[in-house]
Length: 159
Image 1 (cartoon, rainbow, N blue to C red):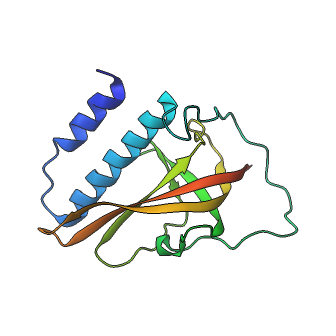
Image 2: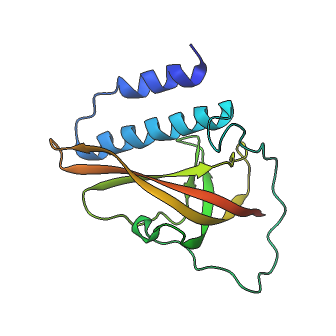
């Protein structure tokens, strides 16, 4: 069993006492599963590009708008997404946090792109929305769990 599989097992074993903790546990499971798929090359048709530190962000003459809500990601839409490495969850998270519709839990999946390991810089990604997939609907807590797949067009670092 890999370290990622053990981590997923530990997260699934959590018995949260309220909805917020259940949402956090579910998002952590999705993040761990995406990390495992990316490291195995399962995303992007057999070979996510290995990424070191991307180049520093320069001045953009024309750039798409900054993503502020998950539900803005409709097929073909282009946005900038700023990511910050969160030490507590050991994952790259959108910064500032993206708004989502009521009773939703959402996550981003990066198609064909592997996020770099933990760094002291933020990332700015230009992405194109690929799809939105309903992962699960939990009637007990009245929550829809969605995964938004995006293709990374370019990446740069912000110090």
